[in-house]
Length: 523
Image (cartoon, rainbow, N blue to C red; front, side):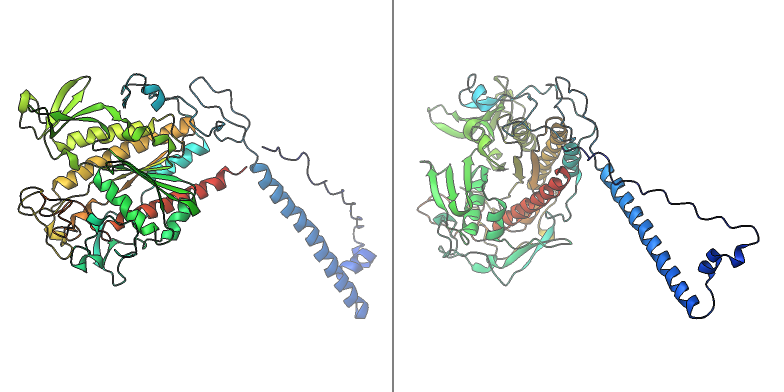
C-alpha cells in the first residue's frame, strides 16, 4: 500500500506586524481614517475597499482551514503499522491490515480434514470424518475480514421469508408445461390432467415481498459460477424447476447424465454457468441391508463417520452447493460408527438396538455434511452452502404403496397444519446445525481468510400448506405402476418454484454484502 506523501502544503509566510498607534493619537492618523472612513464620496470608496479587503482576507483563511481539514482526513486513512510476524498457527497480515491471500486463492491454515484425494487412500469411496476434538487455528482479535464475516453471521434477515401465507397470483407461473423444454414427463402434472388451480398462488412473507423469479437476474448473479443441488429426488425436483425457470432466458445444454438419472450436468454457455445435481440419500456412506434371500431390502446401514464420495469428490469445483434431505429416514435404518452398530431408526428395537429417532439421525448426518464442507481444504474459499429445509409429504388415508392420496385443490389454512409435526421438528434440527457451523465458520474466516458461508433456505412452513401442489393421481402410470398417488414430489410449474425464488433472493443479498465488503477492502 502506498505511503502518504511526505510533507504537504507549504506554510503561509508570517504576516507583518500592524503599525502601532500612539496613545491618544488614533483619531487623526491615516490608519484611523482607513478603518473608519471619512466623509463624502471618498469615505464611501474607502469603505468599499475595506469590505473587499476583509472579504479577501476571509477567503484566504477559509481556504487554509479547508485544506487543513482535508489533510487531517487523509492522514487518518493511513493504515496502521505492519503487525508483528505471525505465529505458526496464525495467518500473516499485510500492511493494509487485510489477510494475505494465497496464490491460488484458497485457504491459508490447514484444518482437520484432509482433501478428497488424500482421504481416498484409506477409504476409496468415501471420506472419513475428523475427530471432534481437533484443535482450531488461533483467531486474531480484529481484522477487516473477521468483522465482515461476523457481520454476515450475526445479521438477521431483513425479512423472515420462512413465515408468511399463500396469496392469489393472477399472473400465473413464470413458465408453463409447454414453454419448458426440459420438463420431466412425470412432473408434468397438467399433461396428466391435474387441475390448474394450484398454479395461481404466490408466497407472501409477513411484512415484505418475495420478488417474482427473474431468469435474467439469476443468470447475471451466477455468471461464470458452478451450482449443484445435493440430495435425493427432491433435490433433483428443485434442479428441474430451476432449469425450467432459467430456460425462459437461455436454453441450457445437457453435458452429462448417468445411466440411473441421478447425476446430471447442464451448461448455460452464454453466461458460463454450470448447473448440476448429485444424488445422496443421507450425505454419508450408506449400503442397502441385504435380506436372507440375498437381495437388497429397503433398509440401509448408515455410516455416520464417513461422508459419501458421491458428492464430496465434486465439491471443490463448486461455488454454490444446495444440500437437502431427510425423507429417506422414514424406514428401518441402522446407524454405524467406528465400525459397529450404535443405534437404529424405526427398527422396533430389532437386534437389541436403541431406536434413536429420526430427528437424532437427521441431526447427525446434517452435522457431518456441513462440517465436512466447512473443513474442506480443497474447496473454494468463497464457497456458499445452502441447506434447504425439510419438504413434507401430504399423503392422506395411506402412504406410497397403501392407497394414500392427495386430492386437495387449494392451499391449506393455517389451522390445518400442526406446529408439533415431525416435519417441523426436522426443520428445527436442520436449522440448528447450520446456525452452529455458521458461527464456527465466522471464526475460521477470521483465522484463515476463508470466507465460506452457510445459509438456510427455510421452505418447510410454506410447503406444509401446499397439499395441493403434488402430482397426486396426475402421474404417468407407466413410470410408477405400483403407486396410486405421488404426494411427495412437486408439480412443475408449481409451489416448488418458490424455492428458487428464495434462492435468488439469498444470492442477491450475498452479492450485495460482497459489494459492500469490497468497498472497505479497497486500498
